[in-house]
Amino acid sequence: MAGAAIAGLGMTEMGKVYGRSSTSLAAEAVRSAVTDAGLALTDLDGLLVSAGIKQDVGIGLAAVLGLSDLSVLNQVNAFGATAGVMVAQAAQAVASGAATTVACVFADSPLRPKESAGASYGGTGRSGPGRTARGLAGWSLASGATNPNILYAMCARRHIERYGTTSEQLGEIAVAQRAWAAHNPLAQMREPMTIEDHRASRWIAEPLHLLDCCLVSNGAVAVVVTSAGRAEALARPAVHLWGHGQAHAPRRMQAGSDWGLVTPAARSGPQAMRMAGIGVDDVDVAEIYDCYTYTVLVTLEDYGFCGKGDGGAFVSDGRLAPGGELACNTGGGQLSSYYMWGFTPLSEAVIQARGAGGERQAPRNDVVLVSGNGGILEHHSTLVLSPHERGGS
Image (cartoon, rainbow, N blue to C red; front, side):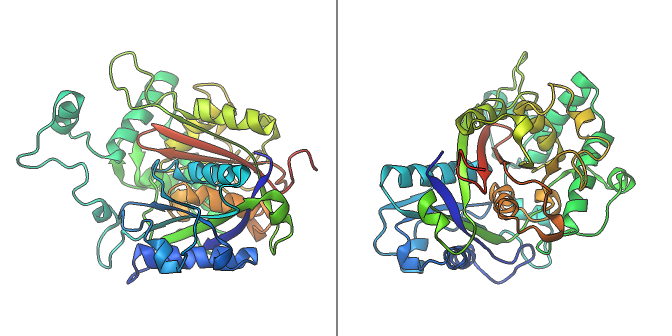
């Protein structure tokens, strides 16, 4: 969408950040993003808020920040697709004149000292005495297919059985992203990883190993969206929004369904790229939502970087690693850096579009593609970003 741009980025410390509420983290991220843009909190007339696992930050954040004269205020939730949806909504508000300067923020704080990351999801989707369900929900409860690990494993298994994809090919994604994370000071996991390390990591839900699965993190990320002209005059390089798209498809697990093999990315991606006037060959940097390695593979297929079923071969041979053909998840993604839902790929996209990646900066950054995925491959958003105004160079 011509006419809107991201002018500010704010990020807190990520990972094992204890003793702070999601609201406190969100407020810090918004203040940081506003300062980054060279603005004041009083310049904000819009605020969009998203909460993660804890679901404990909402529109009350406006009062915490002292924002008493907002034109746009909402809590947005499309799970991992939320970041792209929020930026699109903010841009539309700016374009329509409903607001001039909109902050979009995500915050979460599920980690607790001396508890495992898995405990952050405690009770979610688990069976127990007295719990009942009907139809497919009853089948899921009886079979134990009640959490994202198991359901994403089912999707990956379908791809393996249909197309011959291998665990080692999924491992190539994890290894490539760890190599990028080594140069990201905010990344939780920076030590080198090999395919052998991936193979040796314990099973979570076959065919997914531990190193196929994303981290759990405490922290917050915020961006400030304003008009392109105004952003160009502010403190940091403007990141222009060229296109956006979203698509949603409730999970269909019946016989004959393509669930898990074709995702809403197949509609969201082309929609955003058409709006931007680009194709996949024009993409310099791809920041792909990576709750699991499989999510990266199937999204690249659905975006058209390769044919359906060819994702395993496409991600092999270091293609996504530093120095490879496609700069993908250059901060390490959610597998190795930090888990802030769709704000993980969005934050890194802003950094790359600004040319601020340091040792991990991609060699070209004219077109940056950002994906968000929510549910069990049910919700998708796509953004096309650039350091240039659309039609510029």
